[in-house]
Image (tube, rainbow, N blue to C red):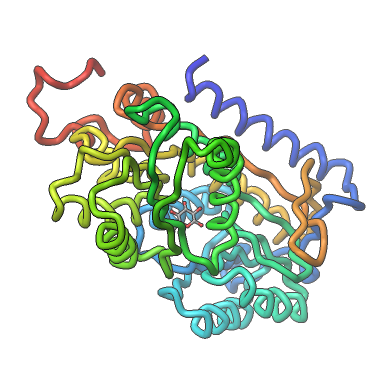
Length: 366
Ligand code: BGC
């Protein structure tokens, strides 16, 4: 079965699941309550949904915004979008302005998963439910959490490295983790540790340098790899970078040392620049996360919650305070040999852009 078919099925199953659950109007464990106000919020008679983003400076979040907005609009709702540019105080203000604007539900991609607990509290005081989008909000009465299987992301990155090391399963690794304020960054590490753990214990794998890239910034990742090179020279086999942005910064550092293309570099998000680097051979892999599925599920849940309906999700994730009803979507490895069959076939990236600059004869069949 192709990924596209699989995704369509997953998306239909999720919609049906949400629909069935709503039809039952169930409560209890895994149930997310709808908006207290219920119904219409804007003067134009349409429901208003709030979307508060950490940042729009990365390609991935622009895609999330566009897909989410489009699906909400198809469902008859308007979306008020705010982006905080990595600033917690600003993100709280953004949520306050979404409350004032009359949003019936607020969807948040937190910059800091702990700091945004306050925003959830503020929304709840106004009777507005909150959905955490992609990143968990900790220690609060969060209503719904929609994301991917983030532990699996880390496991797939680590397994790729183990499978591709020149000396099978043995090697010296540099790790660039994500933002310590992002719960996902810890889940990616946890997934990597699950896979690397036994090899580290056997002494087959050695972590020669690792650090957290504040705010997921490429320039911070570059500094980490620069520091790794200062400490251990060129004596490492892979940079396990948590996502494409920090992989990009790492590759800059490697390029300056003539190491790009010579060591394995992982990533995540299947961003266009990363896909092009995979084709060029300076990045080895990425993780493809079908944002279409996440955004559509979130939009459908948000609009239903805005209408005062209840949603029950099959899974729960504990956020330190409660078991939050959750839906976690599947993730896939994207590498040189399968870009056409994955991200391109799925319409996530365009063939001509991924292979821009590559002579026709050297391109794989469409
Ligand atoms: C997301 C990744 C993204 C990273 C940096 C994480 O929370 O899950 O997809 O690359 O943040 O924005």
